[in-house]
Amino acid sequence: MSAATPTTLAEFEASARQKATAFAWSYLSRPGEDGQTHTDNRRAFKRYRLIPRNLRDVYIRDTSVTILGTKLDFPVAIAPTATHLLFHPEAELTTARGAASMNTLMVLSSWSHHSLKQVAEAAPRGVRWFYMLFYRDRGRMKRLLERAERAGYAAIVLTADQPFFTFSFRKVATTLPLDFRFPNIYLDDNPPGPLGSLELAEYFKKTVKEAATWEDVEWVKKNTRLPVVLKGILSVDDAKMAVRLGIDAILVSNHGGRQLDGVPATIDVLPDIVGAVGGEAEVYLDGGVRTGTDVLKALALGARCVFIGRPALWGLAYNGAEGVQQVLKILKDELSLAMARAGKYI
Ligand code: FNR
Image (cartoon, rainbow, N blue to C red; front, side, top):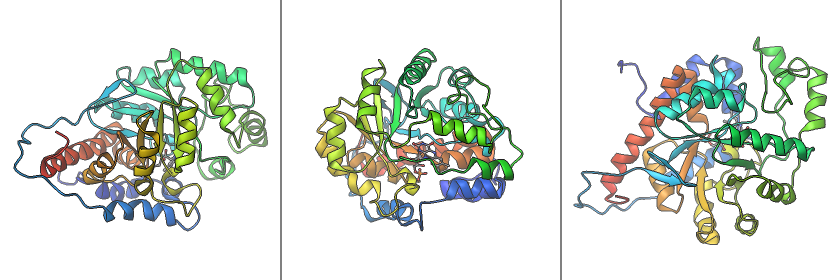
C-alpha cells in the first residue's frame, strides 16, 4: 500500500470525492429531503457504548458468518445500489470482483449496466443475491426469477421502502456521455430508446410496477425456490407480517436515508425488530455502517450481518475492484480488532 492509500472509510470517502464526477458524487451522497435520517444513521451508532470483557483469550478470532446457508468470511456485505457505471467503466463487474476477493456477498441491483449472467461470470466464485423490481406482468417476473436462479444467485431481495422511482434518467442523459443499459429490466439487452428519451420513460412506466403491496411480496415468495429477503423494514408490525408470509430474512434499512426522511436510525429500531422476529427469520441491518465498532454494535444488538451502500461505491470510484476490496478489508480488520478488544464474539 502506498502512503496515500486511504486507511479508514472516512479517508475513502474524501479520496473518492476527488475522483468521482460532480454529478456522480451528488447522486451518491444525496439524502432524502434535508437529510435528518441520513445524519441520524451515523449519529445513532455513536450513542451506543460497548462494555468490554477483558483478559479473555482473544488471540484467535473467527469473523465468519453463515447467512441463508452461505458462509462469508465476515459479516459485512454489499447492499444493492444503482448505476455503478457512474463510478467505474466496468461498473458492477468490478464491484462483484471486489466483493468476491474478500469472500463476501454482493447484492446486484436491477438498475445495473450488466446482466445477471455477466456479473456472475465476472466473479464466478462470488456469492450474489439479486434485488428484483416488481413488474406489472407476472410472467415476466417469473422468467426473471428463473434467470436469477440459473445464473447462481442465492437469494432474491425485494425492496419495501421505495414505492416510486424518482431518479431522473433524463438528467443523467443530458449531463453524462455514458451509455447506460439496464439488461435486467429490459426484456432483452436492447434498450427501448436512448437514456432520457420519452420511449424509455414510457417503457419503465408501462413495465415496472410501482407502489407494490404485500400481495406482490407473497407472490414472489411462492414463485421462487430461492430464499426471499425483504429490505427496508423499520416497524415491528411489518417485520411480523414478513414472518407470517414466510420471508427468510429481513434487512432493517431506511435506504441510507434516501427515501422517507424523518424515520429512525436503523440501529435504534434493530433490537425491537430482532425481538419481534424471534428467530423466525434472519435479521440484517444497513445504514451508516462505517467502522468495525459500528459492525460490532449491530451484531451485539442482534443483527446477523450488516450491509454497506455508499462505502462500496467510494471504493469503486477510488480504485475499482481493488478499492472495493480495500473498503471491505478495512471493515473486516477493524471488526476483528474490535472483537479482540471487546472480548466477545469469539
Ligand atoms: C442505494 N440504495 C438502494 N437500495 C435499493 O434497494 N435499491 C437500489 O437500487 C438502491 N440504489 C442506491 C443507490 C445509491 C447511490 C445509494 C447510496 C443507495 C440503498 C442501499 O441499498 C442501502 O440501503 C444504503 O445505501 C445503506 O446505507 P449507507 O451504507 O449508504 O449509509
